[in-house]
Length: 332
Ligand code: CTP
Figure (cartoon, rainbow, N blue to C red):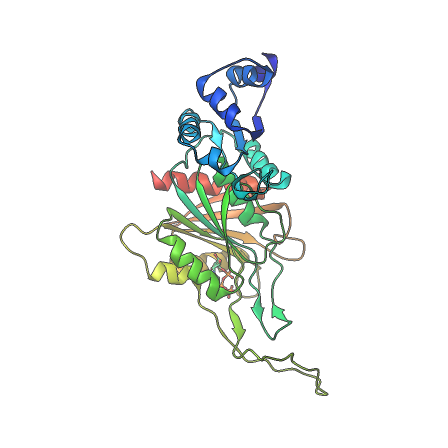
């Protein structure tokens, strides 16, 4: 009784088909189900079972009942199950579960306000091939994108991640589309945008790629310089803006900027917002030990019409909730 009353969050992992059924019907014949009935806090369940059980109409109905009641039931992974079978029903890895728990705890007032919404997030850097063994990459870790994906799952959204070169573990409950080059990201973004309510472009996409791809390694020559011919990559965000249709998704961009002789980082971000034409732009300063790969981010949200909202030094997961607050408001 006290456990449920005092809890800030209840996490059930694994949640079996049997537990889902008992929770849906409000049974209370053991400590766990008693705790669930006395808890006032958010409840997250990570189902794990054989595919047949997960897809059974009885389980589908129990999951729907629990979700209608505000319980966050995170879709299981697809993969090897406890027997020789494989398919949807696998318990996500501990790190994947931890992402969602962390995202839930970081919310000031966790609600399934994105339930029924499809949020697409791109993240990580691109890898543009130079030859069979080399590529041009960048320092992006994908942490901001994974934080956004986890926070959106915690708020009940269906989430698709267009995953570039990501250096952090995956969050649970997301659909992943791997896309390592700008061209692959554009294909994935165009396809997913058709069913999306919002597309958040957090990926660090290379602006250039090699003009030609040799079949053999580029050899070290005696010359002291190496000339590479690079050609422009497509701009994914600008393309989505250009191809907008009637009920096309909300388009959110990121501008990671440094200040220079021509302006401050924020002035550069404002110019980029105007040039890209997206609905919202998240501007943040980067530099050595600032922005890339770190847990924290400071940002200014550019909301259009000259309206801005400052998000002073905060965790990437908290920033994600602020961004999703704005998206949820716009989607009403
Ligand atoms: N972006 C994109 N396609 C590209 C490059 C960037 O969709 N080829 C998106 C990023 O995901 C981000 C926004 O555009 O949401 C701004 O990215 P950034 O790299 O800061 O801007 P660039 O347009 O590449 O400008 P520059 O590098 O010259 O500052």
